[in-house]
Length: 188
Image 1: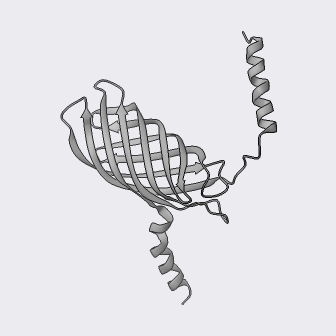
Image 2: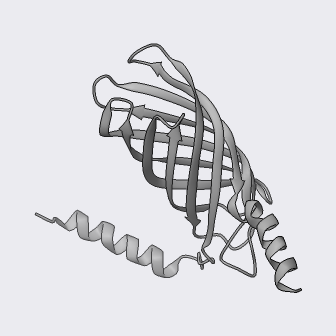
């Protein structure tokens, strides 16, 4: 049953929303390729072993109007470890600006793994990203690229922990050579 305290909290939240300074900002989205390596089963399960990591990550950040402001938003990712399994996940991320376009982005969420003796087993993932994350004043797409450290903790028995180190490369930058070639051929 809802008590008077619940209504007081709701009133405060509404008042804060109405009276707060403008927190609007243009959403900025990004798509990147993640490449790296790591160790599966650092903790738990069979002995740890090295893996090759390949994945993709998409996100959208809100509440940011320029490069030196923090932002919050959702992310989705898909990855494989040495093509032995498939991880799909998503969660929330928090951009903390250190310099104008060099933030730290902290992420946490859930993922599901299919492969490696598991059928869509649930897990928890966390990531720290450091690199360039521009704010684009003219478009909804912001370029990003940098280094990341990620942990993936699989919950079901046996619970295991994976650690991944790598680089995130922006999909637009990877597509530029093909776009330039297309433009060169299309103009002739």
